[in-house]
Amino acid sequence: MGELQPRYPWMLTPDFLHALMQRDIPLRMEFVQSAATLSDLPEANTLELAFVGRSNVGKSSLLNFLAGQRQLARVSSTPGRTQLINYFSAEKDAFYLVDLPGYGYALSPREVQAHWEKELSRYFKDRPSLVGVLFLVDARRDVGEEDRALCDWFQSIGLKVLAVQTKCDKLNKSQWGSRRNEQAVALGLARENIISTSSDKKLGLQAMFAGMAGLFTSAMSDH
Ligand code: GDP
Image 1 (cartoon, rainbow, N blue to C red):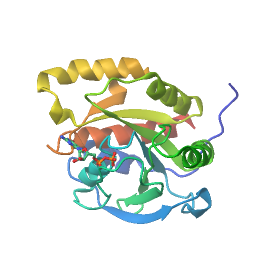
Image 2 (image 1 turned 90 degrees about the horizontal axis):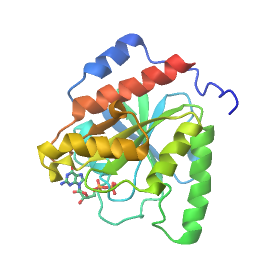
Image 3 (image 1 turned 90 degrees about the vertical axis):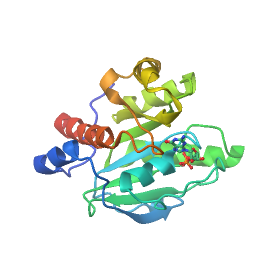
Image 4 (image 1 turned 30 degrees about the vertical axis):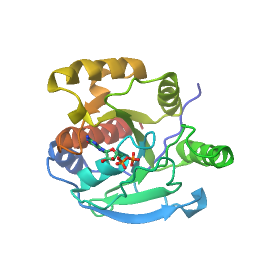
């Protein structure tokens, strides 16, 4: 593989990253905008992390949990409905969190899916401000080949990946460690690149912020 181009010239300060690493209270988050096509995205002058996962994995709930808000991101049990890229600003535009529809998973009608796959592939490859992907997996589900392929692909195009187990409250606490190991192995990730959360029980907030700070730090030190 050729030399990867630096994706972004913008940096977060060491002080900011240190504070994020330690943070254990929700982020100040605001909805910025929704985009139906890539031409509608906000200007790429703020670092961003993308949230990816199958519909119903608990993505909206996790965003609400990170924000300490009930209704920031919509929580819906209808799979595949939200075909929009939703931008949220964290800490007064220090960085963006980007909520993506069920990328890579055939949950919507075929033509819609094909269009979206193409658009989103372009987003992942070409978005200069994108640092990494938070790859959500239901803690109870087995990680499949499709998940692994997607995770490998993100890394092959120079994106950092942090896997986030959702709905850990559905497991016994004693199962957490082994389940985390299993899913890390299945995704081909190092043990420290997967974290356990429960939006319902409000578990894993500090680990999420430390993980996000780690993504920013390692991405910035690459360039
Ligand atoms: P999305 O489609 O990925 O945005 O998923 P949602 O956030 O809409 O959640 C899908 C379903 O999972 C909803 O019924 C949520 O209440 C439920 N859910 C989300 N997070 C958790 C969690 O941490 N624990 C449990 N037990 N259920 C959750």
